[in-house]
Length: 260
Image (cartoon, rainbow, N blue to C red; front, top):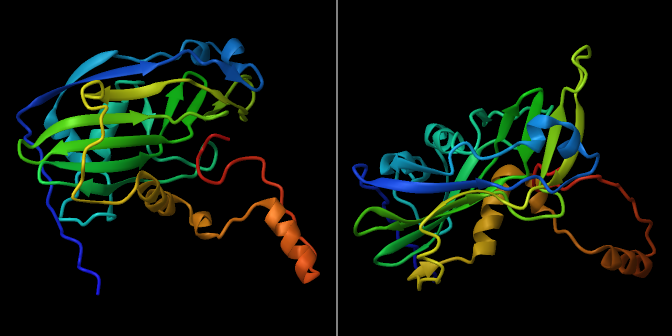
């Protein structure tokens, strides 16, 4: 018989302050060279390289009730918008079908011990640029709480690496209503604090793996993750063995983020 997972409560001392660093690296590549032709994209840079926040801003990442390892909860929007404005003055969390369809902000308790709690989170947002929109694939994140001191030990929110990790919609022709689209790669778009001092892993009393936490978060956005995906080679072998035809659907972008 499995022992029920312990539930813990998480809180922060709102009287403390946290210094957060931010960076947006120059766009390295776009498929149709928008990063060379569109000034707003070519000059996309972080608004404030470093900014101090009251710790209360990060309360939005914590659950309102006690949680167990593996539990997910929705993140509050106000604190996230305040943090995203350090990167760009016009963040948006209400994506629409024109430039994104992944709704929500979710966190998951990955693990804890007597001193620390480790939270993984995932956020989808985009930024209004002059004459268009910039949509990162996603923001992945890690928040480590010192449960005893009720302080932030580590915070990191970033656009993950990938061959393509953002797309854009550009209203190039002001006389037309439509926008043109492109996708590309940005090597770093990130907010962080405490990372340099907390690079070593910690021993957790109870935990799930990072992959398990990320899958739990993926399922909050994409039901396609429930599909038992197999490789094309396995499909061909299975079709030959069972004497069945293969129905092929071609998709020109990923199912798990907004990179295209």
